[in-house]
Image (cartoon, rainbow, N blue to C red; front, side, top):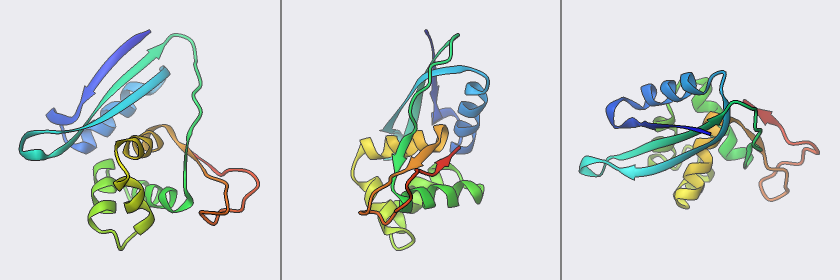
Amino acid sequence: MKVKYIWNESCTSDDFEREINEFIKGKNIVDIKFQPTRGGAGVPMLFALVMYEDETVKREKVQLSKHVADWLDYCKSSSRSLQYAIDHATAYKENNPVAAAYLARGDEHLLTFVRAWFEGFTIENNKENGVCDQKPAENL
């Protein structure tokens, strides 16, 4: 297994996202671990540890509620950055209170959102979030 460490301190969030996407293209990814941290002056930052091999290893996509998935889709289709999606969901809770509450639940939820951004996701299929589809919708 090979490992690549990508840190967003030296680049903008758009550059960070682009660097990860370019690196993983055509590679057989085993795992991507994202870790939120705080930089100078308490600025939120992310780093990614990308593990890859020569043979394809598939990992299940993460599941998101329909409301959180809608927010992620809106941001990506509007050419917004990952940093924008996180910052605006929490700063402007009235835009999408479900996404804001989800991301405010802690690092595990934030990391799930980041994985969904880069790796794709399925929509949870349960009555709690109002999704009644028999088959989860797929996105990537």
